[in-house]
Structure formats: C-alpha cells, structure tokens
Length: 115
Image (tube, rainbow, N blue to C red):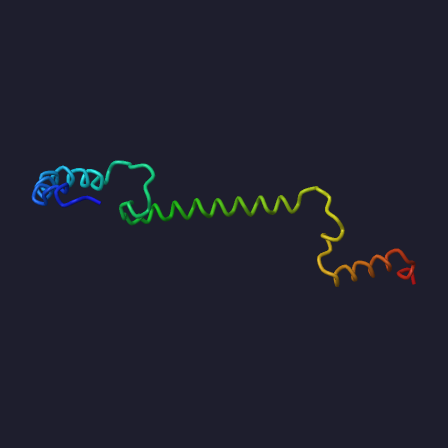
C-alpha cells in the first residue's frame, strides 16, 4: 500500500487533465462526426444516420422482395414436380386416403366393375 508521500499532488493531476482536455475532445469529435454524403461502409445500427427511405426506394425494395418470393415459389413448385420417385407412403398423405386408395385398387383389380 502506498504512503501519502508517494502519491502525486492533486493540483498537479488536475492541471494535467485540464491541459489534455482539448486533444481528448478533438479525438472524440473526430470519431463521432462524419459527413452524411460519404459512404461509411458497415456500421453498427446505433451509429447509422437516420434517413427515411423515399417512396421510390421503398417500392424498389418491395419489388425485389416480391421477385425473391416469386422465384422461391417457382423453385418449390418445380421441386414438387421433379421426376424423382417418391415412396407410396408419402404420395398418399394420411391413413384415410391410404384406405380409400387400397379399396379403389381392389375394385380396379377385381371384375366387379364389369357387372
């Protein structure tokens, strides 16, 4: 533990802090102030300038989103229609549909429909 004789004088510390204040303020201002026109690259959301989007920008964004969703729907449809064979179990969804299909196939393979 330090003794009181080793501790620097309070007035001296205060004077040094006051002398360094302008350069500290300049460093802080330099970090926080930036031109609104220049592109800053990626910034965390709390540092981004709040600029409302114009109607044209909103419409362009929505158009892109609609196109993306439409393309995803097309891909999904094409994937469903792919020629990859699927098991009978997955083609006929639930048990009731399976029972109906079984009954229909029995009728189809019998000669009951001839009468």
